[in-house]
Image (tube, rainbow, N blue to C red; front, side):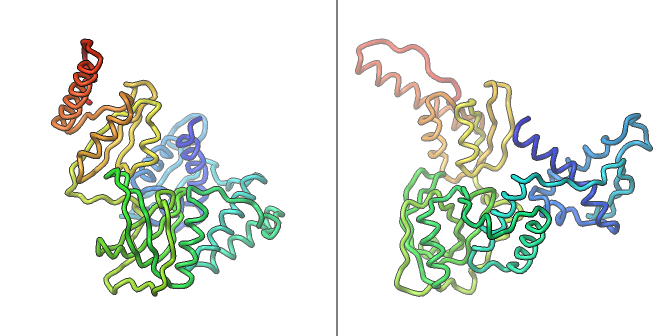
Length: 333
């Protein structure tokens, strides 16, 4: 079972007892937030629950739900009422995650996290202090994370060397840190970027170097924290759309770059179709060229033709250097 399928199965099993515990119903946005998914995905999960239930699969055998505006409640559970129980490994992982969350500077709901940590520890017989030394593996350079935390705690500005993947560019900038976020296993620094004169999110595994400056952090009044409930990546709606088709060996692109949409495809086998918005189409040309045939551009067609022309020109230059004739070029990028 793939990771996304397994995650969905766990969510579906937990949804019915979750809804039953809220007899007056719950807002879809709130439920999606509680399950760490999107509202659109939650709606698809609820649609699937409608055809799940007891043997017989008649009207009185299937889970039944009631929608009222943006709220949903369960009216028939089909026996799916027992909450999931954590294994020892799952409980320890949850305790470690909660302790990591408590270490975030400026955490607004520290009391709630502490209460959750105490409850999980008591329910599983795993004292929180016994797992304090467990190393938490997060996608961030520990040194950068330590320096950023220091700057936040001392209210000092930071100087970053940062890689921007959509431009394939390494930049240098001074920022006024606002908060740290841990989203989907990645650490992000939210800060006021003095050069861009706006709030930016910096993924810490793309920070090459960071130092604390000897000056106070002073985000301006217009620096507002971004709502990340809809996802960290929120591209400019006016930016052009580029659709890439990735081979199995290039699936990592969907994890590393800020993509807007991901769909599995059969051609190539095990591949992905990803959609990204970027104001710099030249970035996509460089990316496809660097992947050596493991990616093609499906849209826009004009960009795909440019990539194909780049490939033909490269083959021609190679033929000139070797004195041989090179036939063919990758189609569509």
